[in-house]
Length: 322
Image (tube, rainbow, N blue to C red; front, top):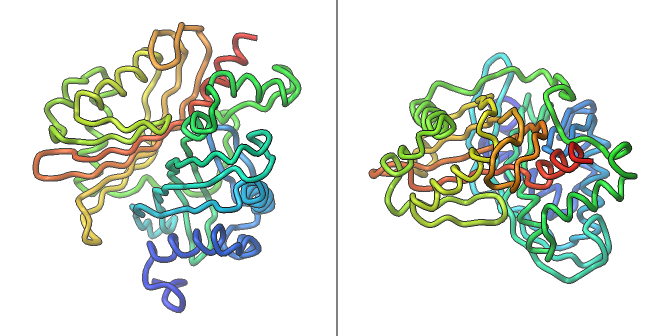
């Protein structure tokens, strides 16, 4: 594996090791080495370009949450000879708000939230990235309501006319990774599952999932059992019933002493035209950047991890309502 053999045993070890080095070992300067100078980083809240923006954001986060840890749960990856490696890295992040910062005056509150980061890599340099964190879960654990917090962001940014807009395809930057993942059967199976769910076939959850399946969802919510998992998807889809569902990247794996698993990056594009997870319909145009991981067992899908950003969705809704 060119670019890895001298320091890391394999590609997942590279992803896990540099994440620890940057955040917990305070090697922020290494971002000059590990991130391309003009890398686009997309989050549901917007898109930035260049590793300087990543460095500034990392320092600000560590200043507010100095004990932050990023515990790598899994790295689901593919290798495209043309575009390089793509890692879908699922993280459990823990932190305590010890100082004043973006979340307001220091509260001493501690939170735990998941993050999924898709990183495209050539050699040992990340050159393209998509990242979704459970922003709503963090906000809730900090004692705030996601809708109210999104409104406060808009106000702090100067009001609806001046506030930054969340990410949408119109604001995207071409970072040169155009791979689609791989054709592993587990990725294909999970892609079919999500497509059926987004098409309204929620009964598929009750027949295709293990009866004891567990879902980890936005808002730091854990859904126990397939009925609760179906309820999560119904609440999301019913809020955006006419939105277009698109799969952008798909990886399947059966390796590394772990269960067969899959990673999907997807989106919903449409309007907030139904009752569901986001309250009264407003007709707001909304883009949802979603990431999902799944693990499979002998009785079907047994664990699911899905993230979208509640704050970015509420911000789009509130900006439309202004």
